[in-house]
Length: 211
Image (cartoon, rainbow, N blue to C red; front, side, top):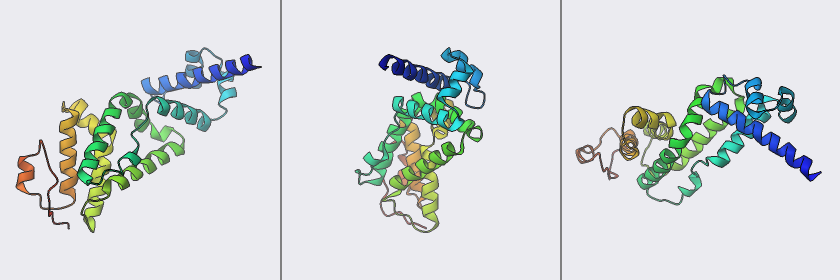
């Protein structure tokens, strides 16, 4: 009985890993049950027996991939009181995670419209939660709150790091400096010249006027 159960679990894992591999290489939209079955060395019927619908299949794949590539936990950022230090820590951890995660996540975002609705809903909720944590402590009021939130969301996105680092040739550190500067500028229309002159090592400007 145990041997049979172990065989079932091993087959399920092979199907999950085959799906994960195809999603990472060609994307969810182009991944077919036939391709999954071929890569996992099982029949199409076996795939459907383990995963009768797309939701259960994608959920298993997402859970397994997330265990292998855990995203930085925003709860650890809450303990950092200074908002700029918190943001720098968050971006440093997120960009380090993004390097190995990009091949998969870029395909997921590209093919979101071909995936079950819960995927886009989860990603949107996750981004909002991270922005909420990072937005604490910035002195922004009125429309500045929206600007800061938008800048934080932009800074956290994998596409931002890809644009600045993969395509732009910047280091993670340089990209983080630019994003910190963007967030600080978003909370006010007046950024001290000393901050602009020291963009490679920006500090949190005191007394910025929020608008």
